Image (cartoon, rainbow, N blue to C red; front, side, top):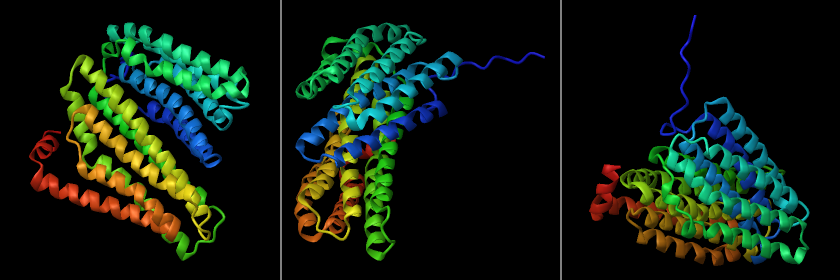
Length: 384
């Protein structure tokens, strides 16, 4: 008895279970970056953490683009993706000392996942994507080689070399024609929406880790519930309307314009959003782990800066994909920074409560504006 061969999954379909499985190592990497911030949350420490996050995010985004074009049901594709997953795991394990003793391990793993990424892209059914990767791959490989050199270099050179690796990737849009990559809108927006969920999951984990070992008292329950409400507000601010607006905008674009939206909107802008989630999660963890102590300036600054970054990243995303911006969100980002004084004077729990109230006010005002005062956005939401 003969059975029909199962065709490879169309890259235009939904995100596959293998992609979701692959994303689990990114969860671990995000957790590690949060811990990196916790162990050095001065300006220099946060800058180092963002160098690590930027490189990790760049190649993660590369795999999101890859599986948008290359199916995940062919056995060889699956094996290569699982091998890349192992490389990502090594990268995540090396994150705490990526600019120190584990820099070489991070660099070798980073090179490994880049080589697999290029190899898989050559199997794309779309010929233009298969050709386009050869214009981007040299920059990806060069950045990985620089990180390997950094792993072998003296401590004084490591930060400079990492910054150079990031700079190499930053020039890609200006020297390589990324517009030749074919992208499917629904899959793209869903995949990058799911990674926001993953990052928000790290903020939930931070609640549990911060509360570990503490007796479950009313102050702890209050602080943890407010932290959960803050994560929920971040979720609401994007998934209530922005995700549908984004898909509509990307679907309406074609060719190079679609790739530009994906790179600047779901690449650079979402990096800022995820960075904001990571920074605020570190602040939440510190608030809960020192619940009965005075909240230091550094903890309050992490909370406020993380929320402001998230909102500014969202505004950048809206601008890059051509959907209506929001003056209310810009004002909320500014007001978030002012909550630092509240945290220092009244404590972290009160600061988190204030941030939640700011989001409730922002979302309420936006709801009224969308219904009565912003016909362009209202029209865009209906079309989406």
